[in-house]
Each structure stands twice: as C-alpha cells, then as structure tokens.
Image 1: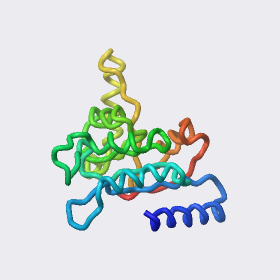
Image 2: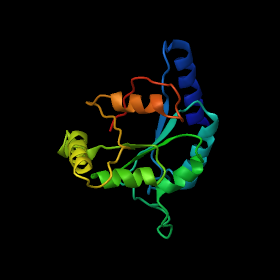
Image 3: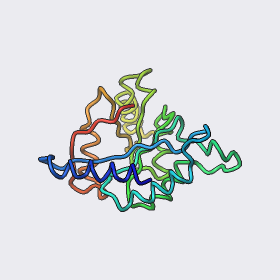
Length: 185
C-alpha cells in the first residue's frame, strides 16, 4: 500500500505546483484478481479506507459488472460495489462501472451508493446511448410515464466531460471543483 499512496502524494504535489485552476485527482482500482498471487479484496478495501486521508477526490472501480461479487470468496454474495461504499464511508465519492446497459442499471448503481456511473462497452454498440436514453426519458416524462432518472454522467475518450464537470461543480462532495479530465474505458 505504501507505493500507491506515495504515487498519490507525488501526483498531488505536481498538481499543487503546476495546476493553474482546480484539478480533480481520481484513483481507478481493480478490486481483486483470481490469480495467485494477485490483488485481494481485503487489501483493496483497506486501501479504499486509506484513501480517506489522501487528496484523491474519487475512487473509480474497474469491474466487468456492477453486480459482481468476490471472485475468491464465492459464498460471499455482497456486491463489491456495496463493500466499497461501506469502506469509503461517505469520505470519497465512488464511481461505479460494469455492464451498465440500460437506465435501470445506472439507477441500480446509484441506488447502491455510487456517486457516478461510467458506461463503457455500451458506447461501442450505441455511441449516442445517453442521447437516446434522454430522449426516451423526456417522452416518458411528458406523457406521464415513469419518473425521469437523473444520475447518469459519463466520461469516455471521445465524449465531452461537460456533464461530469457540471455535476462536480454542483456537488456537495466536490464543492466548486471543476477540471477537464479523461478516464480511459
């Protein structure tokens, strides 16, 4: 754990020295690996707790499915997303990811405690996924259909980050921070 914490301190130092406007620092983590030796969930959860005392602004999970449970503890049915929400204890926002294909999936990620949702593979199939969902949602709202869902923000290599910037600027967690960031997916 010393090495990643040292990297965080150094990156934060560079940001403090060279950033001419607020700059968001995030950390992306793979919760565990099935290989031996490999990343273990207990270590990742302890690391998430240690992030509370760092300048990291958010934690971003890297998983194939937001519904994933432990690879190494098959009897443990608690979602990894839930475990990280508890480990962070509202001290850092969590970005959930993995097999978010429908608006209902994004809502489940938010309802599980994540502050933001990232969409990856679905953009390969439907590059205008957000616009499509928004248009369908607006039609539903205007016709008295299901309640509009509001918590979908995304960053990809080819998309604008204005939605994320707007969210972060208005978020109690992030206060008035805003920056242009890119998260590879």
